[in-house]
Amino acid sequence: MNTRSLIDSVFPLASDLRTYNGEKLRGDLTAGITVAIMLIPQGMAYAVLAGLPPVYGLYASLLPIILYALLGTSRQLAVGPVAMVSLLVLTGVSQFAEPGSERFIQLAILTALGVGLVQFLMGLFRMGFIVNFLSHPVLSGFISAAAIIIAASQIQALLGLSMERSGTLVGTLLGAISSLGTLNMPTAALGLGSILLIIGLKRWKKSFPGALTVVVAGILAAWLFALDEYGVRVVGDIPSGLPGFTTSFIAAEDIALLMPVILVIALISYLESIAVAKTIATKRGYELDSNKELIALGAANIGGAFFQSFPTTGGFSRTAVNDQVGSHTTISSLVSVALVALTVLFFTPLFYYLPAAVLGAIIMVAVFGLLDVAEMKHLWHTDRRDFALLMITFLVTLLIGIKEGIATGVVLSLTMVIYRSTRPQVAELGELGNTGIYRNVLRYPEAVKRDDLLVFRFDDALYFANASYFKDEIASKIRARGNRLKKVILVATSMTDIDSTGTQVLVSLVQALQDDGKELVIAGATGPVRDYLRKSGLMNLLGENHFFFDVKDAVEACSAELPDPSTLEFSPTQTN
Image (tube, rainbow, N blue to C red; front, side, top):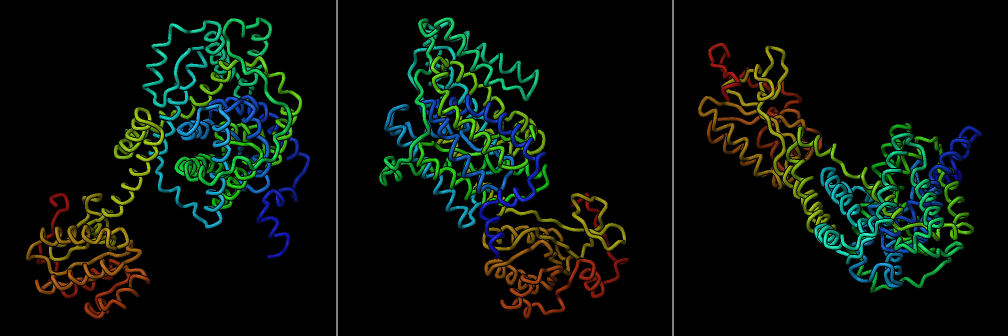
């Protein structure tokens, strides 16, 4: 590998810059400015959601974005604070420290370092496949429930209630109801008005910066009318200046303490990021490298932690806007960082009068889009089993808790993987007319099957997990034919692999058939399967003349050794 290829491999942005031109720069500038306008208020809001002071949302919008822009393979992914990860930080870290306290801040930053290390190592060892163990219905159910929990967590800020923090949705709602007597009318008017304004502006023009508009309007209202004197909680002093380098948060015993939440955030944040990045990449016609994405996100979190960032990842809404407005490369992300840096350096005093209710409104509107009702309706009509998985995960997350919901989702996903691998598709085949084409008789009722010949297809590798199922299914078909059956053709075109347990089952089947005056023939076995059967001795037991390349050849060979079909009965498949 030459130097240029090495640089391009490590820094994908380098190859994009070689074809950079004025048109791409204009698109990146527009996208970068637009995303920064979204990122500044969202970053502060998501920091509050995570249990941190607002300025940490701005810190998380600096170095992590720079590192991803240099290392990431997605040209449009907008990295930074996101609602889902912020909620997971609050849920996980609040077990060990009071939100907003110095100890909590230290643990949140340490969580970012842990998440980064896990993601970086997963990418380095090419372990991106691990996230496939969380199925889409399970993830959809978890995210939808989390969206409701996030929205409920903002009721206190939105209405100005005096209530205790609760770790469950039921506790939060009951606490809000019992605290309605403490409702602050100016806060509620400001919060609910902000929600209506953001939604209205979004319906009027999607690209209009609704979040920034309500931030400016809220600050002006709080300042002009001195709303803080009427019980409206404002952000207050936000430190100016860029975050400094620090290692004071690192403690080995704390890493062990936080490991469960670190692993959850590492997986969930990567899934959220890769899902939106792949969608945009497919639309734009370029390829993503999943393992390099893990490395880039890991590096972003590692580097960010040393400059006081909590965990970050690629977000849905900002990435969509980044793409729609015209981003061509990750230069747009660097433009966003420049504007955030200017804000941190010079403009944080302007946010003193920013009402907490406005930040709550921004969070609420942002998470509305995470509630995936469309997926629930789709699965209800197309796949009730996946719908059940979604709803179980949804209800456990909603009613019991985030950690329990994630654990349930992982267990359900793994259970379904195991279940489906132990009960693969099997089919009895019949011939379509005299075409020599054989299809599943349940799907093609017109397909004809001979009473003296069973054509059985097994659509998976034959190994220890499904060998018993294979044995039961083929034995059931054989028993159904009774004494009329003379030959069994095993169609192995989809049998990609076989192990010793699978071979033993085949040997037992051959011997049982031979004892009953019947024969087994194998059609369409792949090269690796034939090699294994030869090494195991099964090919010698059967004889090489019992192996055929396709079903048609196998049927013709068997038919030549059987009585004239015209003297036999043919079973209509619909009576099977």
